[in-house]
Length: 470
Length: 118
Image 1 (tube, rainbow over the protein chains, first blue to last red):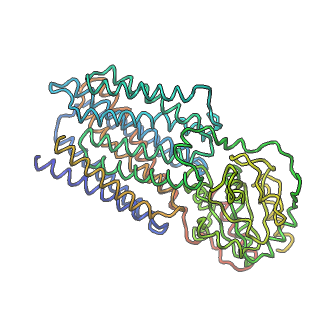
Image 2: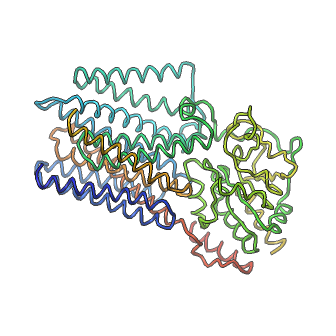
Image 3: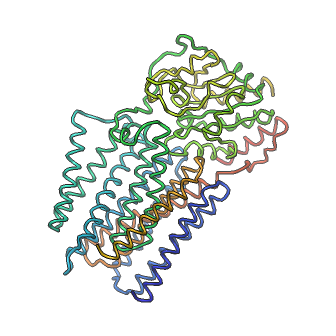
């Protein structure tokens, strides 16, 4: 190892340290921005070092420079534009697209390395082949799977599970074809079998995500994030670069942890979600008419008076709030109540929204101070001391049926909304959540239902509070 | 098994453990920015894309290098910018003057909000 390449490897380790430090600083909202700056600095260092390495080696052609710079400019432009313009409700789609391009780029690195080595005198070593294949397989599955996931989140592809008879057989056949071809590439190095691996992996990514319902998206995105990290780490093995290995492993660990947390929050195993066909997500607005047996409806004025004269209110936002883009309206109501001396906080279930932590970002965007956003374990003991729990577009995560065995959601951790002294639920209809069962909270004698779209309802409540007691 | 592969594997496994340790301390409030930050970090694959462009000499290689460079740089730039944008929103107290006092104050701060976000 020459002095120069020794130095570059050391600088790569420095860059990787910046990534670790950056992630470490994310453990607190107060330091998280500094963390992102550390991480950005690490990336800048890594890219600058690579440029120096390339220039120093002197092997790159003029075409190589042009290809690299033009590609980086175009990609950077696309990235900058989408990052600046994306709506916070559309974050899951964007993250999914970044997973797709990251996984795709990692797979391309391996494919190129293989083509390059296959043309060389020494041929391809076996260890290289295994990591190359892993990179190609994981990267391709991530690429196509993430695009499908983004399409489902955006509503371009139906968010309902897409299944057909024999779908699992197709999955098995694709997996067998991919792995079989991969085995062939190891025993008899050659390009045609590698193409089969790529095509089978891409098809497997599609058939893996299609049957998964919209409501399971937090798990799927996290899992694909873990895949991307692993693919990038494998690319690091292929080209012998520690920065890629360390960064990829960090992302793999992050995605893995989030996948586990999300699956636990739904009380489902990861395997169960991947097999799919359970959740239908957005199709939840079933045609059940309002005001069924034992349900009491409430008008804006009565709800406003309850809220205005409460001393403690907990707001429970769910996907309905995000879907109605009502985060600003809820923050306005909360501000108004606070100005009257009401203690307001938010109870955030881990799977509220379409990706881990999504609801927090939406509320932060509406200027809700983060100390008011409480996690499930923190807020649950407080419901008993709460005058009014205001549930907005949240369903299954508030259903007390989860506490007893024998229901579709048994064992799922829920918010103890039913412990509050009174409960107001803002919801468009008596429709089911994605678990497809009745919510016993709605028929609780303490509960009043306010049937309306979240945005309209919250604006109505705010003006009612102002006119009645302001 | 070569020494290089063994070294790479060691680094990979230890980094996984570091990742588990560091990330399990991130609060749920920050899980979306965390995932977005992880996203930008895997943009390091840009280094791989650059090295392809530096070593190749065929049109297939250039094509692969180009697509990989577009993908990876979109990943890096977009990831960091959107993470920064999100983290900027997390505030302990609203920036608008919203001292919890008279009733008009609520209106003032909400007016400031709709002005700044729409």
